[in-house]
Image 1 (cartoon, one colour):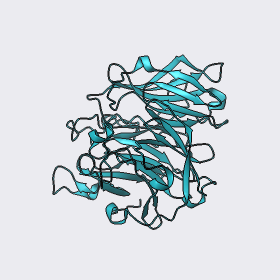
Image 2 (cartoon, rainbow, N blue to C red):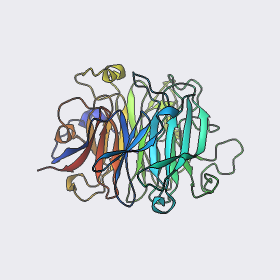
Image 3 (tube, rainbow, N blue to C red):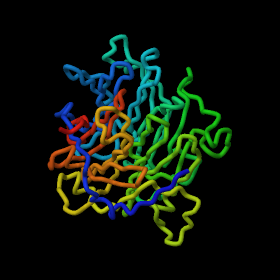
Length: 385
């Protein structure tokens, strides 16, 4: 297991020698959180926090409407429709998976099926795989990804919210909070638990757990080349972090709420040796509420990490092999080179100087990358001129 520790602010302003830019693919959206691409056609599906999944082709088509299943407030919080993933065998079985927080504040992960009309989901086909109560309105996680190596579905959940994980959820393997789960969806009954899961057969620990000790994993991804996992984990007060898991690593503890980033959280003399260090961290120095109100801050790095992807496409050669990630509060975007631990800010190359709130990145079937701006637009990253 490789370990990294980077004083992010010491190299944050490395000279930008990458020539890239972006183009708008969709705009005038309502709280977009995610984009997905149909495995055969590369058709783009836009997931909005308000409950709609839209298909973007020549026109914009409503694929699935879950707005009556969720609660959306005028001032956004962390609930709503949060995740989507296509089954690896979607072209044959028509299955896709979504995660959302319902009107009773339950986290739900469900399987749906496309209808005979390929541009419409069958809303009556819902089969719930996970359904459990959230104690608060934040730290829901809710991201879904199929691994390109084992084809299992991985699911993230946050620690349940509030401040400092008051119920110590993330360190308790008897619940789903603060965890990455791993399940086999190739089952008529919903899912099976892979026998090589680290807690398979346990009476006291959730068998679905793959990794734990996370605060609020907001977007994780797999390297399309080898299945290694990158996890953006939102910090509490001081540190935002990116965590790293090699494909065959399981049962690892990332330390929350004992540690935050590479630092002791509540006890300044904690023993950090039993926890996995972040691949990188950066200071959480912005005000979240100012970001949500559209107020710009000067000389800040961010306050809510947005995990991204290792670029494995062919059209933007300067980015190949680099990890692209962002911060929701500052709208800054960075590239990270694992080979030399170099971080370069590429915000100016990709986007204008206007305010942006990066909710996610997306990866199409050709491994090209997209930027999801919560303020209502989708951008495709492309080679600069």
